[in-house]
Structure formats: C-alpha cells, structure tokens
Length: 258
Image (cartoon, rainbow, N blue to C red):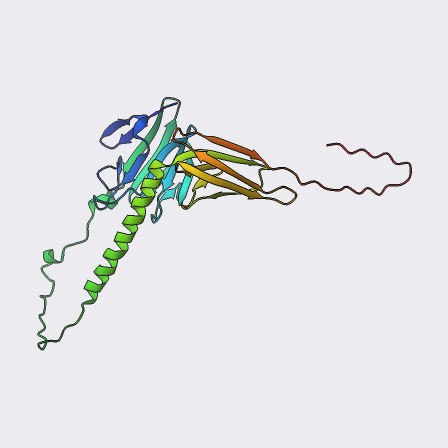
C-alpha cells in the first residue's frame, strides 16, 4: 500500500507522495533533507519503505551516520522512535501508519551557524613575507600537493557515491528464502548484492542462487528478476540418501518414522 511521507521541518511540514521515495539526505539540490556540504555532492543516505517497514541505506564511503547514537553502515531497519544523526542533522521516525510515514527533522545550531575565522579580519595577524629565489629555482609547495591529493580523493569518492546511488535507486527488493534456514546463501552477480536477512537489492536480470550444507544436495538454481518489484523466490534443499545401522538386543522392537 502506497504511503505518503510527512517531513516535519523547523520551517513547517512538507508532504511527499509515495512515488517520490526514497527520502534523500544530502547537500545536493535534489535532497529532501539538506545536510551541510557542497551543492553538487551525491546523497549520503536515504530512507525508503520496503515490505511496509522503514529502511535506512547508508551509501558506501559515508561515515558518521548514527542510529540511536551508534555508527551504522549499509542498510538497517527503522522502528518508531529511532533517531538518525549525521553532520549536525537529526531525523526521527515519529510514526509509521497505513497512511503515512512521519519524519521529524531538527538541525543543531553549532553545525550550521559557526564558521572558521578569516585571517583577514585579524588585525594582529603578521604580514606575509615575500622570499626571492634565484632564477630557475623552483620548489613544489606542500599546500598545493595536499590540495591535489584532496581533490583526487574527493573525485574518487564522488564517483563511487554516484554509482552507489544509481544502484540503490534502480534496484528491486527481492525475497530469497532457502530451507533449511541455517544454510549460507550465495547470489552470484558482478556487483555486490546488499541484503537485510532474506531481502536482497538486485538489478533486473538473471542470477544464480547457490547453497551448500552437510547432508544435503547442493542447491544451484537460476532466478530472473523483473521490473515489477516484490518478487519472492523460495527453495528447499533435498536430503542426501543414507544408511541406518541399528544394533539392538534380541527381542527389541524398533521403529523408524519419517
């Protein structure tokens, strides 16, 4: 059932239709909940609805996202009353009903209102000293080297975040269950397959589901993920044949059930 999202912001309430999900947290122009940072940066996290539950997704390369005071990464389920915090912004899941998901957003003043002092405003700052060097002598400035590596690192991170955001927005939520429940399930794919329990985020296409467990035949099945969403795949592993040897006293009655 489609639910609207109500954002309770300091300036008032804002409603989002269900087709605008997920709720994006970031500093870019497309973010629903704004974070401090450059306007061209990709989102840092998102809040979505999956199987009538709220799910927060922290994108790769992002650190500092806290859930109830504890750092998290990847995807986590949210319950009513849970609080997310990142970069001076707190988002609380106030309520989740059949009609709407209500998120309360608050901004910490110290994260937004302060800025580092400008050297030009300091009247007591010493004047810069110019140093003349002989002709032809050059020297790389440490500050310029540091800025180069900082820009390179930031560019790589932005590329990774952009790719992760595209994957999350275009992937489908798929249920894959294998019996017995304790088996370790492997989904073969070119890219990582993030999942919470038996729920996987997969692009449309063909995948192989593999599982191995002692006393069972190996499982190797192909699944096809379409674009309709909410697909479910359930498999049961078959027991291997075996031999039972019973050594009992004469006259004993033996029963084997199963």
